[in-house]
Length: 124
Image (tube, rainbow, N blue to C red):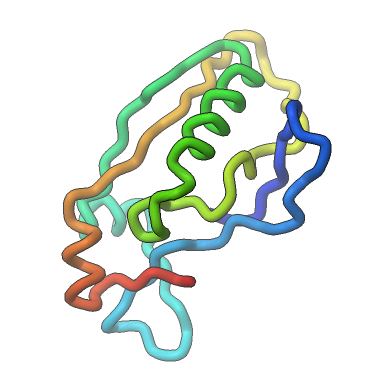
C-alpha cells in the first residue's frame, strides 16, 4: 500500500495519514524493511482474492470498500492489511464509461504461520 488520498463523501474531515505497508519480510530483513511484491505475496504467503462487489459506478465501489473496512477495523494488523479505512482516491478519475470497479477481499491461510516463524513481520 502506497500513498493514497481519501475519498470521504459522508465525512467532514479527512484522516491526515497514509496507508503504509503492513507486512514485511522477516528473517532475511535486517535494518531495511523488505516488502513483498505481489508475485511474492501470492507465492510465499498464499495470498488469494475474491471479488465481493463490482459496479460501473466508481462512487458505489468506494462506498462498499469503505463500509467493509470500517466494519472490520477492529481486526488487528496482520490479520487485516489496511491501517485506515477509506484511503482511496480523493476524486473520481475521468475514465471511459465502460470501466467496472471492483472491491476485493484478499486473504491467506499462511500469513499467521509466517508471522509466528518470523519469515513475515507485522509493521506497527
